[in-house]
Length: 155
Image (cartoon, rainbow, N blue to C red; front, side, top):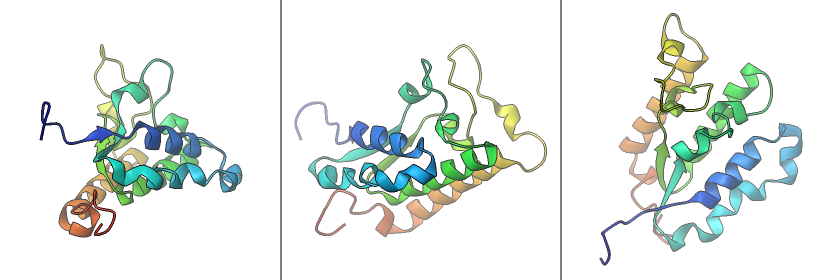
């Protein structure tokens, strides 16, 4: 291994393509499925991380939740489907803080996360938090989800 020893590369193409797909009204997505599948054409050329990083929730880009189309119910449903797709896609996962419970506003380095969204009774933010917990559990405990991420012949 040369250089500084970094083994992974952020797959920004996957991130941009899939976020572009998810922001579409579902009725129009049928014409854009290539945005979900294109990443597999080059997926095994590098060791990729699938990032939803701090760069995607600042400077007027909106939160990941707010990029989803529809009313609140539809936004949360789309976000859950997106996270399911992300965890099923080969590559390591990266969620920036707040994404694990569907923070509804952009990240601001001068303010704390909206932890109050998790206070009180069960709500949609709790549901996203449980989903991420369950996806992480499945990912960690089932080798097929991660062990051969970077081998196109064995993975």
